[in-house]
Amino acid sequence: MVDILRDQEAAIYLVQDLVAKARPFTRGALLELHSILTRHQPTTIAVDQFGNRMEVPLRRGAFKEYPNNPKRPDGSIHEYAPPEHVASEVDNLLEWLNSYADQNPLLVSAWLHHRFTQIHPFQDGNGRVARVITTMVLLKAGLLPLVVDRGMRTDYIGALESADQGSLESLTNIFAALEKNAILQALSLDVEAEQRAEKSLTGAVIESLELKFNKRRQVRRQELLGVNAVAERLRLIASESVERGLQDLTRKVFLREERPEVRVTEGGPDRGNSHWYKFEVTRLNEALVSKKWINFSEGHYFVKAAVRYEKTRLVFVVSFHHIGRELTGVMEATAFLLLETFDEAEEDVLIRGERVGSDVIPSCLEPFVITWTTEAEKVEAAFLRWLDHSLAIAMKEWGDKL
Image (cartoon, rainbow, N blue to C red; front, side, top):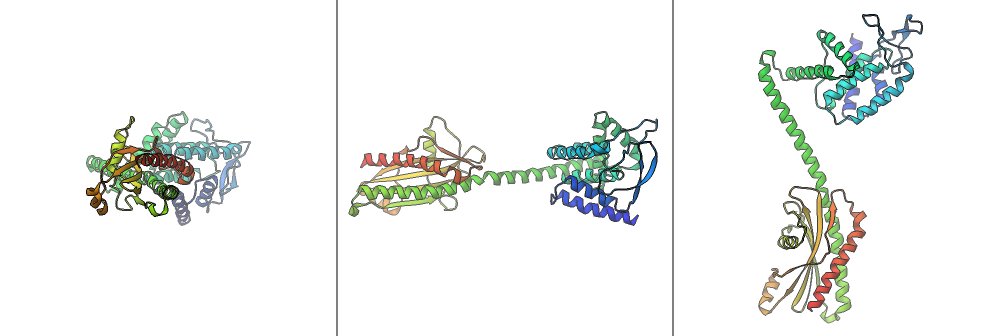
């Protein structure tokens, strides 16, 4: 008995690895599980091709060599998978199990339990292995292990018979009832207080689901916020490219002594100035035929480039802003310019750094869209082409004003 308990303890360690996904559940893991659970069982009973019962060495961690079809009380034979089909049937079982990972765990555990017993892949120890892998599925789903009481054996066998006929309902109901009892016992609730326990259990399940979905929402939110990193990378690219373009303009168009200064500023939550140009971006959006919902509650990034000649200043802005009432993981870049002219009375305003209002002039034909799945390096060339067109429009508008 002590050896059996030690074998079961060793099996638990393996199941813990499988539940924690430290190891995948493969054919090799299944064979190792059988080897552990039968470590202290040297022999078993098999039936040869003539129907003779004989004692044979138990091949631990190996599939059966002999048929192991039991005889029913009425004398009929219950057929399990023949030895030559076991390996392929087990491989199919494991493949299907992986595909059912997102399904109801009670239904999956009932299906796995029945399908495994239908195959009966080992000469002996199939029941022990079936119970352990069923527990593995439930533990992965955050549920408790099931223990089939001897008093339920008749119902259990009947449920397996129904499953043989294609209906998992009875077996699933048994597993659900056992899981309910296990949870009630874990909560230290007695049978007389079951009605109260139902309410407590419902509350516990609701709380568990709330935590689960909140965690899922947080994970999803972090995924969608990945678009901010793309915007930050494109902001840097835009800053460098726009500065080069305007410096090239001033160098080639103006004499050295009259060459205007080019100033480039980056904006965003990481710069403490993400509120800049929200009004202009909103006005620009309202002028579009296909208006979008701009979500400034999430990160807003921009690049501002300013160059002034005499009384006319060009302010060229590239804005990266979120689209959608909720966080969607989608941002678009738009470009616009402000052409500002100053008289003598407005000089002190400019010196103090306050922005003088002017019309918002679009300088892009259409927005440049990025998402949380966008890889900045893969769209860099396309973004630079879009930016070049936008800056060219801004330069022309400024040149017309000079």
